[in-house]
Length: 427
Image 1 (cartoon, rainbow, N blue to C red):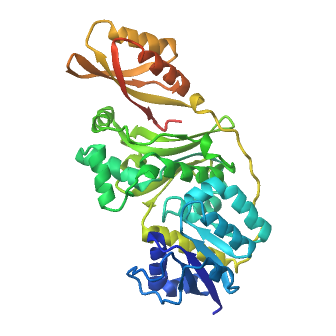
Image 2: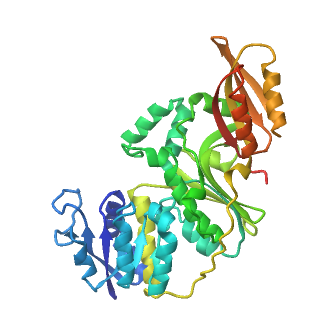
Image 3: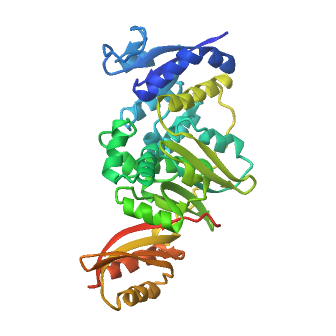
């Protein structure tokens, strides 16, 4: 059996997972790839650090030049994360005619077009299955299994940290801060959780899914982004009363030849399959014009699930005998719908002064801005303030924003406490 050498850049959680998978599943990997795989080098900052793995010392290196100087290394696996120096190393690898596998969603989302073009020019493969939804084969599913479809919509729970937090808030009535702390203690959230709770992570992944599903390169600046830090247990309880569950969704839809791209907390019907995706699990819901509705579900993060996707990409490269075959290079570059032109239902919660005529004032403002109300609930009273909760019919985002701005100017409105989109999947 022919032998091939690979190099791994980075030995964090995913790097450790890749090493463990090779250790435990080497026989299966050999049989499925047709090659004997040797990890020739692993790039680390500190070669003397104890990582709890049985890795020969001669494999570890802190010098990237050792890897580029070794002509026997045919595949480089980038697991460092971030933009720099990861991008520089990947571009150098491609220029050296080495195939590349990465799990780096930020890099793929922001620099994927350039890297993919560079890989094509140099006749090497650049694979990134692990960059979205961990061990769920969503990228390969879209690129291979769904190629006969015109994809109309992709909706995903693609960040395990926020899904864990929202699950704890919904099932155990925890507040956001407590649920976040528990997520950090379990290792689901970083010490600085900004990338997750402010939805940057999900935004990067949606950019990748958009490229794959709609053949459109997307600037992350064109994706509407909103995190979960304003979600309260009170909102979650209200959602339950309306028959909804709150999830952080990444949404890409084709609307009359334009793409609607947004990442935000969303109320979805409690009967929908996505509402039952809990804890750190991920799921991607795809609507194709031939296959209909399809949902892929599984672990969206973790050393072994993500490592599984990385190793699967390595095997895919080897199954081609490391030869690049013809592939579609058609880019449609569909226009992106401005966020204010997107249409949705909305949940709006506000505190108002308990006096006559307030509801009429509010209804007048909504009506003047083409916002129709579906449901209105009064929720308790505190210090002469009452909480009003509205569910609107479908409305333009811009009309909602204009209404909110005018409502905040009313002396009878104390504060707008929250605005959350509602998705009913009815079209």
